[in-house]
Image 1: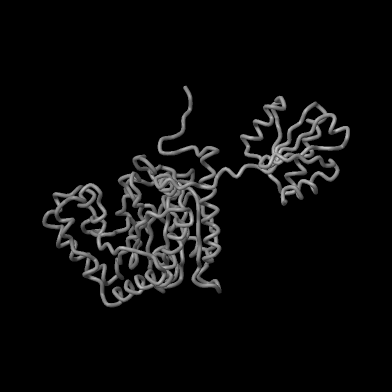
Image 2: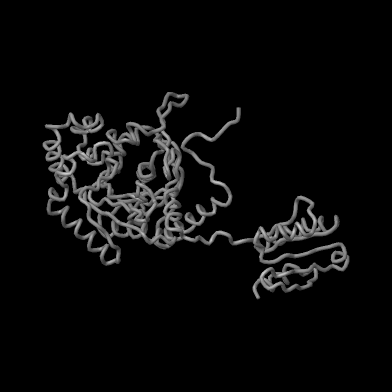
Length: 424
């Protein structure tokens, strides 16, 4: 019996992994420009962290977490998302005391959710996310959204749609909660069991139900926008103003409800408008989470962030047929003829690499014609040919694969001469 990969996971092979590396590289470059610093947290945490932060009424906690007991009887969970771990680290390491505030962080790594695998959705998936903790300024909400939009655009995506909403402050959400309970309670029996369980605990989560989204009460449900108090309205208006100042197009959708309990005020999603992308169009989601640091034992430190799936990022690039600059090729391929020449290229290859060049040689004892074909497949910029005669004469022939021009150089000064040819 052959052992196969677990359902809902994937192997990312050479030829495909370069797309991931390109996105990761671009994300790090942007974070440096926006002054976000990388944080790396454990892949598993105490289960209580996600119960208290993500919320026990969410699908993630109720149905999707990979939870297990260790040998000491402690309940641990593979992280299903990145914000809770980042905020836990912020509190545990007292980053709220750093001189530079707000604390601006980013993370990149695998997350785990037990859900039905489908196109672009896996049980182990990779998220890139940012968190800005320590500021209640609506301008940083706009900055976080701008960073996400900038990343997508820098990779060539154009068919994007930004949806924003306000979930209001605690007072606004409380008034909206009462209105939702009154709206749904008389007919809650017509809804799924999850919605029935959420009615009293967190009725806003009913609006995010996929099973009952076509129910007539969904369409007529009270809008959070109608229950925003003056402070929440002013805050949301500022966020919209800043987005306009940044020339970022957006649509206000009062029905946008993020799937995690810790959100308040600004909530947003970025979607793909590309034809053929699929029924689930969301690429990225995020929002403000004032109160989360207090929930896990820290001081008051308002925050905002987003997370995006790299798998869905790549699917969007493919849907828009974006041509990525992937096949960069290598700088030099060493072709050898004869046993002594082959032995000599072992050291020569290392010298090239240590000088900063990407280089390769033959390891299959192939004929010279096959070695040149291997150089072509490697998309080599130069081929350096060393035979027994050249070795005796202390020479090597360097050929430019673009122009076809050949140059004979001394082996003793090969690296210096190759550098001159490479830069010319």
